[in-house]
Image (cartoon, rainbow, N blue to C red):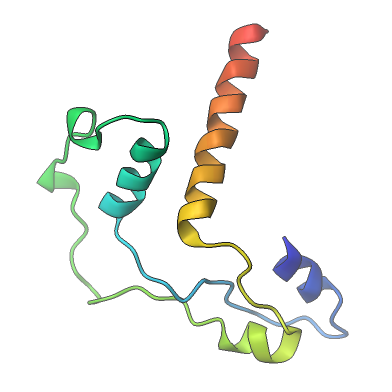
Length: 100
């Protein structure tokens, strides 16, 4: 959100990449998520090769150099922390839905 706020403070609109500069796999994101709630990912996730994306690029990695240079922005939260916060937000959303 801070990056978006900084973008809105600029005199002229521009495009920026907001990224950690860290690459990870979907498998690692799932592992972090399941570990956070004490579950074994292998017991809950089914991997179907039909849904593999063709390898159009070897690696996907965001370059936020422009946001750093022009906005003074830098990532403030580690990827694993962000994933855990997202899991917690989903858990809270489900709890609220169950209470209504």
